[in-house]
Structures are given as structure tokens and as C-alpha cells.
Image (tube, rainbow over all chains, first blue to last red; front, side, top):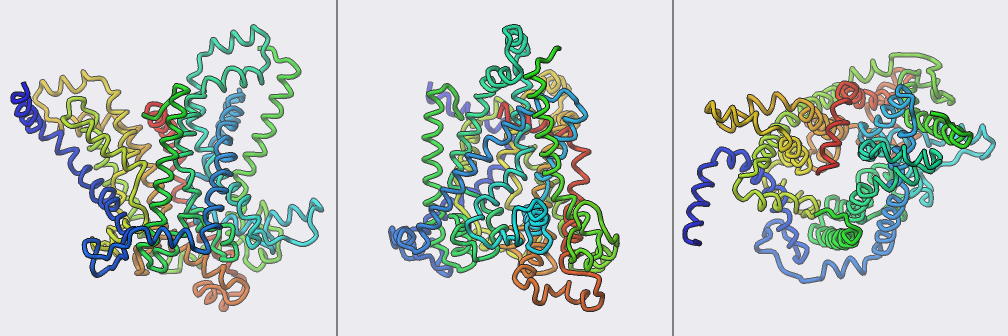
Length: 308
Length: 296
């Protein structure tokens, strides 16, 4: 049997040369631009020398990792990464779910469409533009936020929000919610649309108020979708953000609260050309992320939902 | 349906929160648009919020005369058009192949692709690879490395797998090859999904500034978002003192224009093209997102 099945397989493969040739360019591209860099991760264990390349650079074992753990920035970087990720998980994650639940209660279709369209808008703006908006709105001289706070008699002097490190986390998370909430709600709206309408009828006959229907029917019905997105979010928990932080924290004063693993890698790696060290820091992050993803998925599988 | 008092309160609360949300979502964009149409010196006095106080087109006039900016705009247009077409083409072809259940080694390919969604070499190895390939400071660095998105491939594949088998079988009987079926039958009926992925890819290209920031140092190749970022950065660093070069030149000549008004006009020029495309494609992408997320 075994002797027979092998040639059959190969001839089948040759027979579908046209299908295989559709797939081949994709495989080559992904191999070159995703797998070769994965192999490049080895330089984390080297003293990488651009002229020697990865074959002939000197191996240094865990030195780069040790350097990172002992670096003066280590504590701040790790704290900021975890804190910002955690805040995003706590606030940016439920926000689109709440928005979708609210939109679902709207019966006036025109109103619903306007709100939806407006809430998608920020998703289409680049982070460069968004950071421009933020700088303008928060500026000391004539930023709308300062004007508003002054008119409400909440402040006496304008606040320079973007140069106070302690404010950075709140600003970052708020801007993230602003940019992503509308678009992220699409998925949950779709899940809600799939809920069996007879469940609502039954609930209202039993005397459930609209709020109770939302809480006791809609929410449980979309839980599987929520869990899947939760798993993905946990896998990315050490990716506190990159573009948003890099652009919003262009003022180095903020670094104590804004530096996260990814921006640190960018700074030491690209700007200071410490390639091996930066790769080691990046690898540290990837490994923890994959482990978190596996744990989250295993826990979720117990609840009957899983990514794979 | 009859609503109880509690329900009415609940509904009112939701309407009210959504109105506030709508304003918060739209205001930053609107405010910047207003400032871009307001005379710079007047803006500096403060209080320009929802309507221009001293309307002028002068800011845009200056922006459209700036050759460096126009050139960047053009680079962004080119990379968006070329990048989107190529990327959608290669990705959809790949996805079509992957959607065939009898494709040999299909499961192995799928694992090969999915691994890359969760683990990557990271910034530095990718940077060094791109450099070793000689892509630094070329137009193609903005197109080739990101040509294939595994996520988009999966969305396409889900859509293609759901097409009725009969369509393709009859074409096969008529002697059509897989390529023939793909171009003559599958592509024409896949409008919504092609529009969706096309829009996502185009938005990605138009808004990307980071590729330009790390791989491109030649001014004539900078995409508009990267240039804008450079202008803003020099603006922040020298705020109040000298301002950036482009702005200063005009400010010296024409006192009614300030760095801020100029920046706002530039930001609008870098935003409006993408905003204009999306209302036309909105009905598609909502459908497209659903295909990708629910079954994905």
C-alpha cells in the first residue's frame, strides 16, 4: 500500500500544477518575508556583525537578554508595557461591545446609520493624522479641551497635557478607543444580528425589560465571539501599541511612562543600530506573547470555545 | 410594541449617549477642517471651534504650491494604486488555490501561513532582510514586503469556499482551466469581497508612514504620511521658536499664515482622499468584515 500511495500522490500533485502554481508565489513571499526573519531571530544570541552576517557572527549565548534584564530602562519598559496593555484590555476591549449593544437598541435606521458612519470615520485616518488632531485639541494655547475646561470653570490655567508623563496612559487609551471603537463594533453587531428573534419574544412575554433582554439574551448569545476576540487580545497583550505610542509620545519627557517594549526595540535597534540587543528584547516579547496565547486558548477551550 | 417607563428611560439614555458619542467622534476631524480654512493669525487668537471665523483658502494655496508636498502626495497615490492592485491580485489567486479542497498539501500550507499570524521575526531581522535584499530607498520597498496578508487570504478563502460548486463544474466540463475559471467566473462574481479587501489594502497603503520612516531617506520617495510626520516633528521640537522650513518661508513673506494653519491644511490633504472613497465602499466592507470574522 505504502509503495503505491507515494507515486499516486506525486502524480496528483503534478496533475494540479495550475492550482499549485496559484499557491506557489504566496508561499515564496511568506517564506521570504516571514520565515527568513524568524531565522534571523538567532542574532539575539550573537554579537551581530553586519559585515560577517548571521553565519559568521560571534555567539554570545544569553548575554543580550541579561543586558536587557539589567538595563536601567527595564523596569519602566516592562511596567509601561503591562500597564498600557492591561488598560487597553480593560477599556478598549469592552467599548465596542457596549457600542454594539447600544446601537442594537436603536430602531430609527437613519439615526443608527449616521452614528455608525461617524464612528467608523477615525478608523480610516492614519495615526499621523490622529496624533495631529490630539496635539491640536490638547494644545495649551487654544486647544479645544483647554477652552472647554476653562469655560466650565474647572481649571484656572491651561494644562499642557502632552508634557505631563502621568497623563500619558489615559490620553493614549482614550485616543485608541476613539479610533477603533466604531470599526471594532461591526463584528459584534453581526453576531447580534444572528441571535434568534424568538428568544426576545419569549423574554418579553416573560416580562423582561429591554435592559434585561440585552443583559440576559443578547450578551450570552454573543459570548463565543467575545471569547474568541478576548483570546486574540490576550495573545497581543505585550503589544501595548507601537505607532500610536511612537507618534503621541514624540516628546522625550514622556518616556518614563510611554516607553514600551516595541518602542524600545525601535529606538535601540533602528536608531542606535544595536541589532542583536534589540532582537533579543523583541524575542523576549514574542515568546511571552505566544505562551499567553496558548494559555488563554486552553482556558477558553474548557469553556467550549477555541481558536483551533 | 408597548414600552414601559423603564424602557423609555433606558432608550432615552442610549439615544443621548450615542448623540454625545457621535459629536466626540466627529469633532476632532471637523475642528481641524475648520482651522485649515481659517486665517492663521486669527486662529492664533484662539476660540476657533465649529465654524471658521476668518475664512480663507490661502492655507491650501500655499500647500498646493509646495513641490515637495505634491511629490509626496503623488508617491502615495502611486503606491496605493499599484500596491493595492498587485496585492489583491496575488492574495486572491493564492486564496482561490487554497480554497480547493483537493489541493495537495493544503493542510500543511495552511499551518505554514497561520504560524506567521502569531509569531514573527520582529522588527530588526525584517529590517536587515529588507536591507540585504537591496530594497532600501526604492519605491518597491513600500509594495513588496507587505504584498501578501494572511488575514486577507483567509477572508478571500472563506468567500470562495462558499461559492456554489456547480458554477465551476460546468465551466470545467466546457474545458476551462482553473485560471480560466478564476478570471472569467470567480473574479466577476466576487465584487463585494474584492472591494472590501481592496479598500483595506488601500487604506493601509495610504496611511502607512512607518515603512517610509525606516526604509526611505530620499526626499523624492517619501510618502505623504511620512513627510507629514517629519513636518510635525520638527514643528513640535521647534514650537514657538523658528517653525519648520516650509512654513517659515511663507510666514516671513505672508504674515497671515501660521505653522498650525498650514499643518492642518496639509493634514486634510493627506486625509481627504481616503475619506472620499469609503462612503462608496461602506456597504461592501460591512459585509466583508462579517465574512472574515465570523467564520474565519
